[in-house]
Image (cartoon, rainbow, N blue to C red):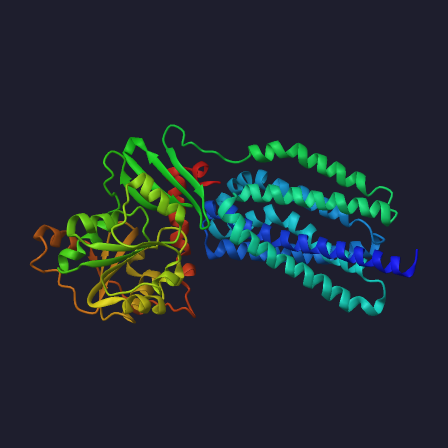
Length: 520
């Protein structure tokens, strides 16, 4: 072999090695991001689920780096194809394992359950993908004085692969392909990479049995494929519930679920109910929304409203039908917006926007006479929407006589719930006046409706019916804001403060629906 041929051969080897670490780096991020999508329908898309996935990924990669270094020093520069084939097989098994693992970890509670589920489901494949790095460094290093540059190049290319994998998944695959299908496709791509690499190892590196183990593992994977595809959980509701609509969106698992015996239709995002109506006539069944619907009677002259968190859309339609108010709506999830139109009869009464509220609010033009912030369910908290800064953005869109109605789900905790007090204290940083009403008096887990304004709200206004006044006063409570902390973009412990509420709410959901409906 001439010198030029040798250089060409070495360059091809290096290019193939870079392609390998690029693809495995992308695979790491795809698995990590998909992990949240697989666990969130059961445990909620909370900070604890994200923390669990990130922690498990770091643990797995740390083990993989250590094991990979040890293995590479003893494998005589071969065996990388086998590592990738094993990673492919374990990746392909994840969709098949999801449901039984989630059901098994359910008794552990929200935080421990999310962490253990992530540990069991994703550690094996991520650990083997972590092994690839040290192997690749060993293969790329021909001289001791080149170890630093070889290691730097390998990790740079691997990180670039992670970047591309993240963008590819988030920008293109998530909106078009389900999580299970992406994992199955990733497993098949890794098998193809492993078999291709094994051919090189056997021919070029004189490893006599490189192809056979990879092919055998690929055959096992292909044999598993029908079971993996068949493991996708299709729940029709059985005798009690009927699933009318089901879609995995960018932000969660959206369902429309009917319970005919109670004449009840629910709009659900993951394990949170975000809309409810009677099946027979479509009438709203969420009591807290009845409180918000009385606001225009308390403050006559409201002509324009903003609803942040459209949900099923009942609030906007009632404001139009009862008071002739035009309502602009913001909804982050396009699947929720679609379900509201198709199954709850929602028709926009103003500008209907789909996107994250913090971004979309900056694009709006006020003034609004009424702003309803209805994004806080029993599940995970969109904490970035409840900070001094976010509320200040909303106030800037409001007229001087406007009212902000904020629905917040919390535990009463005998009047000492810190999360509830924090909401009151945060509102007090932005608005001069506030009143608080409870949806169901006497119940611990409740919807609390805060009415905040620049001017004092008069419950004795002559424009509201006396019976409605009595109904409101029966639900008015006092919240001691001194026990709370102001929530800001810099410091917002809302999810931490709401852990007990989230676990309590999830327990009620499991008791009502059962784990069968909530599991993906």
